[in-house]
Length: 462
Picture 1 (cartoon, rainbow, N blue to C red):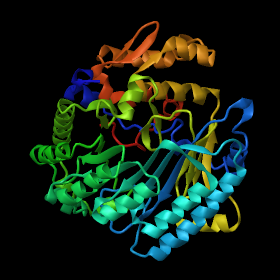
Picture 2 (tube, one colour; picture 1 turned 90 degrees about the vertical axis):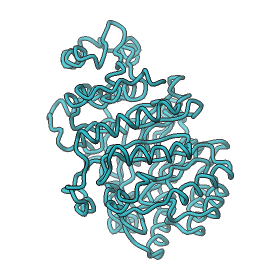
Picture 3 (cartoon, rainbow, N blue to C red; picture 1 turned 120 degrees about the vertical axis):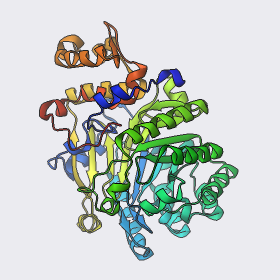
């Protein structure tokens, strides 16, 4: 994709910038139910080869520990410097992996592995080796798979990057957010350009295949001029992928955000100007707009997957392996097996208690019905490819599209008149002016949102 594939129209954005989910799953996690329990999840782990299907695996590990608190953070994390806590956690992780693996039907080949958090690089070198030993004992990591880890450059040196390469990681996501010192002080995350460059250079020297950077716009003390300078520094580092997230200030939900002075927050107009600047700078620098808040170089696997129609979304964002079952381990982690999602308990105490009872630590989940699967395929197509083939949906799901989605098509007319989408007999296409608002377009097909119209639970689309 090129710059012409996104049209930035502030008036349209203001008009259609509603609260909405990020659609890393459909149904979204807030729709999961506690009636879907460990027994239900175990049932699906044991039915992976029904119908002769043998899907490869994707693994996710949630490492919740951080040395220090970043005020903007909305992740499930534990602030500590005590490695006694991570040592205990790894012991219980090993038990959960063993239990899931024992219940698992089908092959053990892993195409994707991701460590998120928290701060996965909180783990010591020995702890990282221990975790990867747990993985390798139960699963087979295929050669040239995608094995990624989130990295905090403030706590990582060349030797740590070398260790990560040695145990099998070949992709890295580096948290940056903003290089401006005033912004960094306002969010309690002081991180220099030099220490960030050190980690990135080490990863390149050691053969990492893709390096991603996370930026956040809308943070306190940010303005267009300061963020432009941060963008210049990011472009100098030239990561393979860039994620540009909108900061959602929800202090009622996330306690650390209460330490942010709301008087320091940029206005809604300034935030839009920062976004417009970032999109222009990144696309002019040659990055392809993948969707939502993701940009990638033209030869990156995400860009290639999108061109070839293979792009997918899961709980780690955009991905290239739609066919995988996702096994998730650790507190609050969410997995996807067959037509089901399952989420683990959210606190360490609960996690340890349940595993001590020799039970899988599932808090809640959902088993998708035919309507969920249909709507998931439509929302995935919109989020990943900006278009839906009506004919292919009708053939795959044995429905009359116009009849089944009569109300949705009526609701889309307003967006069509505004120039966000084009609807004809064969295709629903998101137009360049609608691409930044694709979450809002996808919401039209979300049965749960349609049922309750309760959108305040989500952050703004932009």
